[in-house]
Image (cartoon, rainbow, N blue to C red; front, side, top):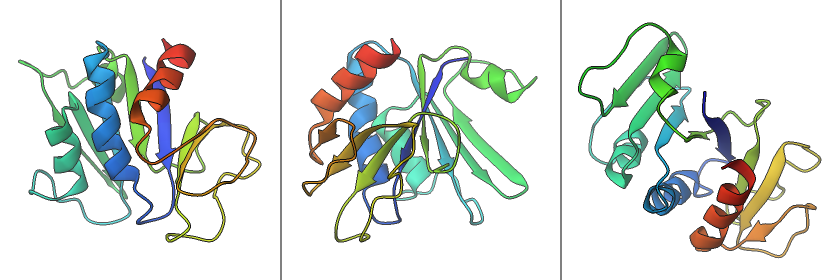
Length: 160
């Protein structure tokens, strides 16, 4: 099973935009990347403009959207295996999840002052980095909203 890393933040903070930038940078470095989009709403896959479509357009080899009582996946494979969720990610180096803020996996928070007043992960020992537009110290490396190369460096150093 590959490393699972969660990109978290409030709605409108820029999580999908960060994933759109991060996936191509990590793929350029030779990593095989999957994404899982957490959704609390009805799933609509592969519609232009939808987050899952945007993940796929960014180059993700696998996109999984999870909602109550539903799992939807788009995976680039000649013949997909259907014998367990883990099997869908066994060929990847890293899976980026969008959401799952209370999950036990390592997290990168996207925090923009315009989206919310306080970071979600203050005091979360799984927080490994902060992507932000403001000066705030959570005791982890902080990156600007466009510092994708530097963030990818951190991910590569820590998880490969």
